[in-house]
Image (cartoon, rainbow, N blue to C red; front, side, top):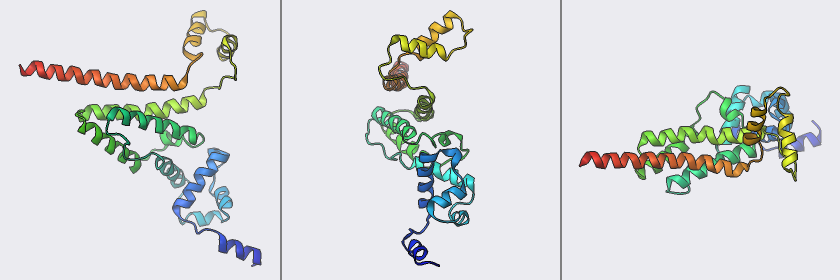
Length: 232
């Protein structure tokens, strides 16, 4: 063993599962999910692939571990006791997570494993909503909607082509129509321009959240009024 190799082994941080997984997240951020392999990750860490199997059982375990690392970036305890603010902050955090890790974010929806972290997040939010008088079935229904909404919205943003800087009305029309079939009817072209044209994605995201929250508020108001009426 050469002196350089000996020094390298002495200074190399010992492998742990957390170190392997956090390195995998960084590798995918830089090179993409398709480029990830045990061999390439091992080379990135300066070890042979077989050394990784002491910490991850398989490639599937590695992918599930990446999801663990992603979920760990979402705080468990809501920063607000107001359930509406807590829901909005969770949705924003989920959307931001996808944008921070666009190359691995698809794993959040594709891996068929139930992770503890999102359950802990959900449990904490359910507590906030119960404490605010929201019936559990309503709170659960909202959570079931918020998670796929925020993650799916962000994934759609990543897939949607960016408009060029200074994109004017004519440029937008050309960009949208170029994405359509030449055989599309005038009505479908008009609809595409309305739905897929100029859109403030941040504002649209907030509108979606407000619609869900206001819908639940309206339902709770109606249920309360019905309960008062039946008690008379």
